[in-house]
Amino acid sequence: MMLIRPQQMHALEQALRERHIDSLQEQLQAELPEHLHAVGTPTARALIADGLERAVGHGFTSLAGATVFVKLLFVLGERFDRDPALPCAAILKERGLDEPTRVTWLLDSLIRHARSLSLPGEG
Image (cartoon, rainbow, N blue to C red; front, side, top):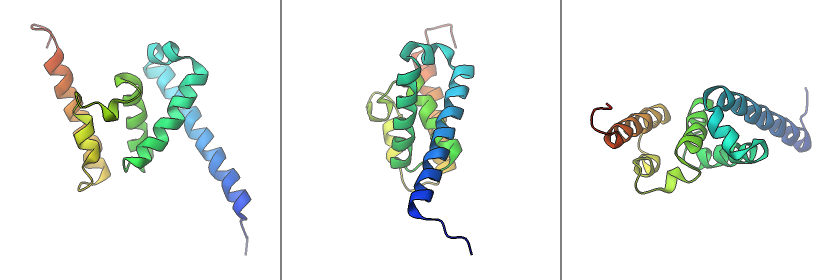
């Protein structure tokens, strides 16, 4: 039987976390290059790491849920989850729903919010 020591498990977890940060940084570079460029690489990595931790704090434990959370952080601002002007705060506090439903509600509410901000004739 193989035994994994706590130090080995910690090293493995850290390596997986760094890989996830790298992957998210690549996605952001492809999808939101202007947002990534605005903060610079070192700051972007720190924001991604912080966003992943905060995503877990909001109950997003899947890769998909955490990824949505981090991308919203770059689009809406570093503290979007605490901004009472955005519909996110209430949805993020809703723990009675499963994660995929919360992610869908979050994205839908943000689309509605964005449409409400558009100028007449834009959409």
